Amino acid sequence: MRQEDIKKRLSAVPLFKELSDKELEPFIKIALTRLYKQKMYVFMQEDPLDRVFFIHSGKIKIYKTDFSGKEQIVSVLEPGEMFPHAGFFREGNFPAHAEVLEEANLIVLPIDKFEETLIANPELCIKLFKVLGEKIVDLQGRLEAQVLHNTFEQIVLLLIRLCQSNGEQAGNRYQLTTQFTNRELANMIGTSRETVSRTINHLKKKNYINLCKDGFYLIDRDALEQELFY
Image 1 (cartoon, rainbow, N blue to C red):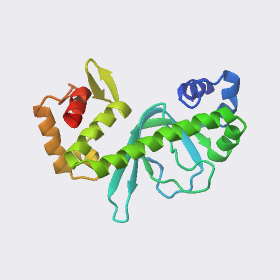
Image 2 (cartoon, rainbow, N blue to C red):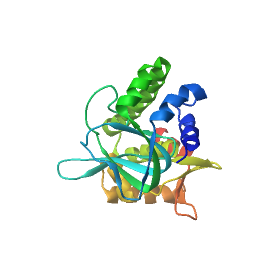
Image 3 (spheres, rainbow, N blue to C red):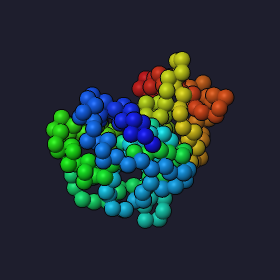
């Protein structure tokens, strides 16, 4: 990948988008690029945390496994996103697995050099804390959904969240940009595939969800919110 491509991608990332070319230069200098094929692992849970990644192209699934090997999907990340968010300014291990869903070009920054450059640019530290704050709010929302809502409501909340994180507006609906199986949706909230399937079929009958010709979900987010809150 050319340096110009790295510059273009990093300048579009929320953390860097307000930087001048001069301010962005130190990050470009320490950046490496890597191509990962589908189904490859970028890192595995508990590997030493020594790099931070920015997605130039492709999709990455972040998920955890417990002692029995059961999978819980944390998120599916798309171009422009940074990962992992945990682990800055401390030593540790990667908190989850990162698996390639679609062939991915990644920009890789060594964490030690990334942190040094951040410390030299205090305004970037403030931006990073804002990004981390947004992730904390998202995680708090997921925990609240599990504590305060029944399984049907959790699935509806998940679909609403995916409209934001993995969707794009298509008329008065949102089209998901990733094809999720019922098993994957179930793994995101810790329920069964059968429960998700029943809920999806119920929502399809109400015309809140349908499939586009390419097999991606089309979701009426407003209708789902009304279903949940009214």
